[in-house]
Amino acid sequence: MSYNRNSPFNDLPHLPPADFTESSEILKHLAKAARYLGELNGLCSSLPDPQLLINTIVLQESKNSSAIENIVTTQDELYKAATEEGTTNHAAKEVLSYKEALYAGLEKMKAQKNLLLTNTMIEIVQTIKQNESGIRNSPGTALKNAINGEVIYTPPCCEDVLREKLSALEQFINDSDSSSLDPLIKMAFIHYQFEAIHPFADGNGRTGRIINALYLVQQELLSQPVLYLSSYIVKYKTEYYQLLRGVTEKNNWNDWVMYMITALIETAQLTTKKIRSMLLLKDKFENQLKQTLGSSFSYELLQLMFTLPYLKIELLEKKKIAHRQTASIWLKKLSENRILAPQKIGRTTYYVNYKLMELLSAD
Figure 1: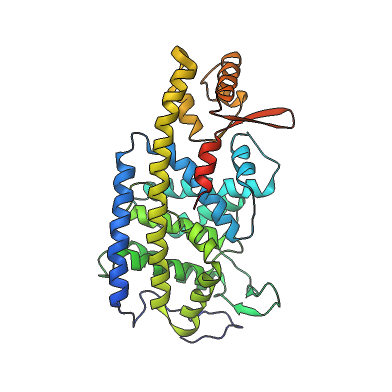
Figure 2: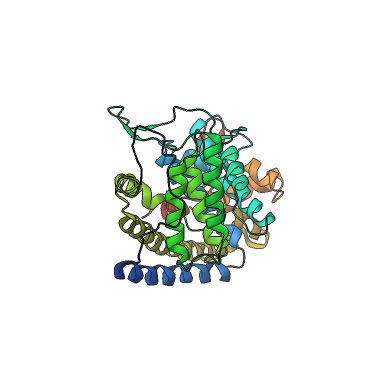
């Protein structure tokens, strides 16, 4: 590679890498990743209502992905914001826009015959940033060390070069006939390449992580976008950035691919465990709600408890699950029976599915 970290990397080569070979270690990890992804996909396919759990998992991913960008919101702030028409918490807004961007990208991909295109990436970043941002078209972008200001990497510049790089990446993503590469190796390549192109002024990291999830759905490795690597990247953030630099500076694709496949393995296992635990908790709560509410038991209320763990009377009204008086009676009964925990914030009392919150917080 022709590379100088202080100059725009306009010579960034197209994919696939010319000299990459699959090591025996990578092949071994690929087999494990395929097994755990298959288990997760089978579990998701068997769910009577996948959307029930997807929303909760997506919100967790939104929080973790934003944390990588140092956008920090607490779990309480996030789920409280998700119950409101609007929120004044800036960090929570950013996190919720990530969730919206994932769904927007998924719909765009489906509408474009399952192709993952440059315009999909642009729509994702515009939804994340809640503006009309597009491809960078001004020089001067450089990634710097936050402590000493040293330039770490200078991505390609400017719009014509970036569009050419994105066009080549788009072709690589969607061309199933040109390569015999395992799709999980391709995903590792795609993620590096998008981050190296760095096509937007802001939101590249979050857009790149959404592309990961969409690619797994596109390749039919998962039927739903329920696997996200952000929790793993948060945990091993320093290594993540070191390995990205290792590809750029030393052409070290092997360690980068191993990192990404390991992330897939660990995240698939964790996600499967959480979904199974959520299903067990939901079954337990169904019995408790039937005992507590008797003939007024509402399956829609149970569903909502596992979609938005922070409930309030107005939310049940808005969702047309119950009128105000009925909603108030239900939530107070569930609180008295310690199924939900009341939490007063300002003038509003929220009823928290604290068992689900504890489950989501566990590693």
